[in-house]
Length: 86
Image (tube, rainbow, N blue to C red; front, side, top):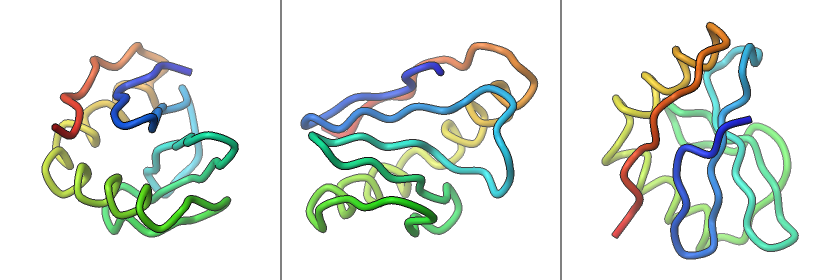
């Protein structure tokens, strides 16, 4: 499961051959969540509100790149890293 970005202690991954809807796996400290790429909503798990807000902000800025990473991973490829939130 490739890491596509990491910032402020948040690690974002995509799983190869994962299920729809397109989503990312986010880990922050002991928290883990699956977040939909298109909307930024939490599909499963839990994140602190501040961390979720940072991930949603990052998704707004990098949505096209994250979708490309999802598409590559869905075909069992290795996606490129996506620029972190600065």
